[in-house]
Image (cartoon, rainbow, N blue to C red; front, top):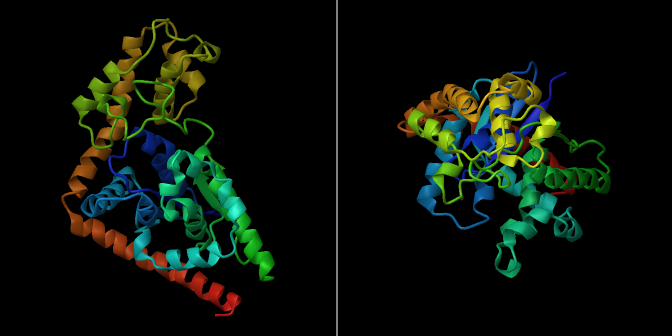
Length: 333
């Protein structure tokens, strides 16, 4: 029996290797598993929880869609759309927001981290966005949601909301309670300059990340300059203790090669870092450069990208609006 999968990516622009290995590569694998039904969303409503430049946001929505397509997400096999085209998300979110409890939202650690010390100045959207995330998932009867560790708490909230709605209105199993799909290995790709920090588009140094739009030369140069340490190449996994940069580079190599960390260490044991970096450059260029080329090609054809989103949103809208219609009947509207 296949899984019903929902996942979303924020259109923040400048997607990088961390986004690819941590999420998009996994999406493609899930899509290609027999009998899975996948819905992949560019979550542009989530993006506006912080102020966006309208033109940049529009470009970023298209760029994220282009990255989905270039990485192998197939609009014939999966639904690809952007959230703002399906009004059922906002409508469903309001109804679920009336079921969710303040105490639940107050426990969300991500709001505390993002709002910082001055949470009075944060938008209400940033505070309640986990409820919108719950609507995203629950409107599609998703059975499984691929999440990173940082989103695990939000999925727990989706489960709580689903269970409370079903209980409050005596509709057992109406909202399906989703299971997390947590990637065990290589879910967090770290900065090439500092192995203790996550790879991020907001890092001021472009050398800290490999962008999905980088050229071959840029990829090779960034890996050549990636930080390692002065100790010899590790002999085993224990040897990686307190060597975050080395562990990160080996993680990237292992993930792109679809092999275990142990096998990667065995492959290079006794060799030097320059040999390893050469092979790492080769695999990153082999896997990422074709994506980069395709993104650049797709970005020259906005009409094509907009058509993919329009068709996807019609398919998504048909599913989500039907669920919202039933919710309204249950609520007494």
